[in-house]
Image 1 (tube, rainbow, N blue to C red):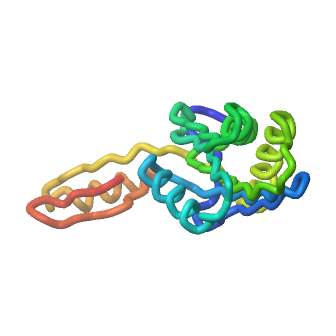
Image 2 (cartoon, rainbow, N blue to C red):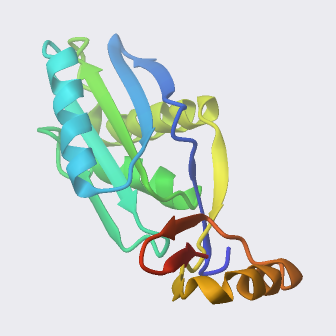
Length: 177
């Protein structure tokens, strides 16, 4: 991957994974996200939806450079849920994604290794169901011109194969390129 591209999951796809270990049930979900505010909203939805689950752990990664991230164990022993989930996202080089795993406790303790494997596998299963896409960053420019230059300018755009995203007509014509 170059610095102007990154992998994520498609916005319309919500991956879902299901994993069981010693009667504990792990439900995993993955969503495309664009901001920390979205993260908070999604987590709140899952906490409400699965209010009877013992744990609602999550990990997210934001930005093309993958520098904004967080992992949360939600009461599981430290480092046994959120970090393994985050490692799955890192290993698959994904960004702008949140993975959430809700756990229904089955009555048998799994130990640190068992929890780590279970949370990792649940996220990996959810990602198998998701549509992974490659996104490319582009530069966007606004150019404002007098009306008298529009024909020449549009000809230059066409000749140089520059995409015009939007045109606004006001005192001047503003092109979004």
